[in-house]
Length: 196
Image 1 (cartoon, one colour):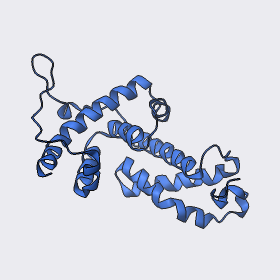
Image 2 (tube, helix red, strand yellow):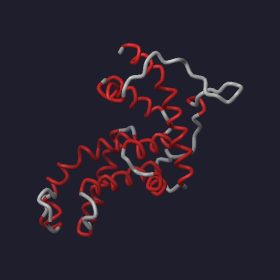
Image 3 (cartoon, one colour):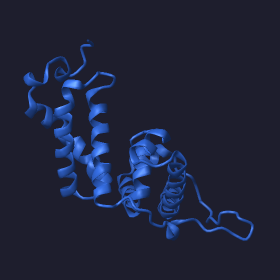
């Protein structure tokens, strides 16, 4: 076994330090669930359920990935289960956030004075906060697709499996959500570009 693998992988479940396991993983699992659910209380309940499932499944962990990757998938799955129970993944409209088009079908955009680089945007804390707020403003059935695909790095097929929808449905939701985010973020990004 590689030296850098966590101790928990090398020992049977009975001999692991469960408190340490929870302490090392609870924080990031909670942040992930809360970013998807938007509520701390519901996220805490979800992470507790995810940890119980992980600890019960630990003896069957096959080491095909790191423990963190395995826990991330369990957390995402449990969060989606919670969202389904709360009926937050129902279809809703994004019409108010969609771009406008002219008579020729071309997108109507205001001119940008300059284009900030992605690195410049990431360095600006308030911009990141605004992006997070914009993502939270989308209906959850759309924001979860963006989070899973663009933030968590799942591919389209994996997102479809996680959400129990077709790949074409994921692609449509992702396209519509990205268009809505662009419309919401453009005014702020234009101001940021003008200040550079």
